[in-house]
Length: 143
Ligand SMILES: [Zn+2]
Image 1 (cartoon, protein in one colour):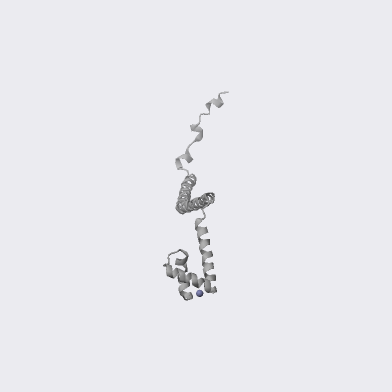
Image 2 (cartoon, rainbow, N blue to C red; image 1 turned 90 degrees about the vertical axis):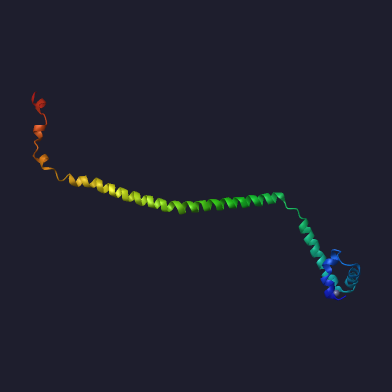
């Protein structure tokens, strides 16, 4: 038995999947070869650690906490996304509406201003009208 063959078959040896004769020769080699016996004990230790880890029960409380944290993060991300969507849709709309409002107000202000300009041009009939003749002053003179 050489070291290479021994190391190659160590996993199968450990799990008892080797034919009897190969198993015996590996056992014999591990007793004789320090290098392979160290390798074997390291391998054994690694196997034990792996087994321990696979046997570890997930802490349900920890899992709940982690899931709650993940859900909270997802909600935050969702809110941020909604806000982003909101501003992406509504900012142009609001900008358009405010521009339209500004134009409308400008037009209305211009329309309101025009009659004031026209009031400077009093029609001729009004200039020659006798105010005294229109108003009755009789009640003032009766005293
Ligand atoms: Zn060896």
